[in-house]
Length: 141
Image (cartoon, rainbow, N blue to C red; front, side, top):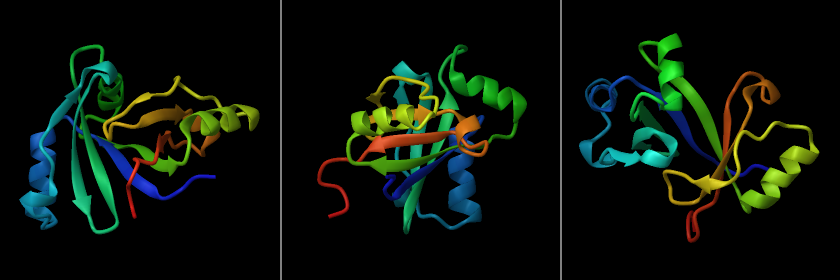
């Protein structure tokens, strides 16, 4: 069973421009927006916008072979890329998704929060790419 909503991933052509939107238009304080970091194994740059009950993950392509590049070619201004839910154990979740007939797009790998993640194909989730991430140890409690 999925746990809490951890974040909504938003693909953007420029993280810095997107940070300015959340800061200037929506009033998110600079202190609630993380530094931009790189995740070369996934071909992305990322930053988090921390809001009261969740996070927005801003993701920008890192290199020409980034999986985000195709998304941005179809959506040049950016848009919602995925929704991420927490699970207790990523391996149990992966196996359960397979048993239930979902297409798991990758073997567990370390994501932006430093915990293992998998993605579930959008065709199995009403057109939404779902990320499942193992709840970070010591989180929420």
